[in-house]
Amino acid sequence: MGKSIRVLVAIYPRLMRELILTTFADQPDIEVVGEVTEEAAIPSEVERTTPDFLVISLNHHDQRPLVCDTVLRRRPEMRIIAVDPENNYSVHYWVSLNIQSDDVEASEEGILGVIRNKGVSS
Image (cartoon, rainbow, N blue to C red):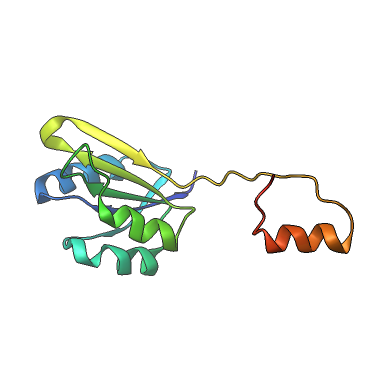
């Protein structure tokens, strides 16, 4: 089986990053596409390496890291795992799209009504 899941690792401190990299090295279906040592470099490395998953540090388990919003806006198909080794806690972030529908009158008036009301259903 070839490596199919692309992972970018951006964990601090270095020891924790090395443990995660060692764990992934033993997985035949996971390819580590990069290692980030500076948090500020995460967005550019995500763009450069196009991972399926980003593994980051979680500094406050009750607060989503800002980098999640930054990278998921650019790559909503990507998933993020945030690890807080001090509290033995991890969280998985992803974007989901909820597609909704509403019947529209099949006329010029119906279509223009939806557009003018910005698609808000009554």
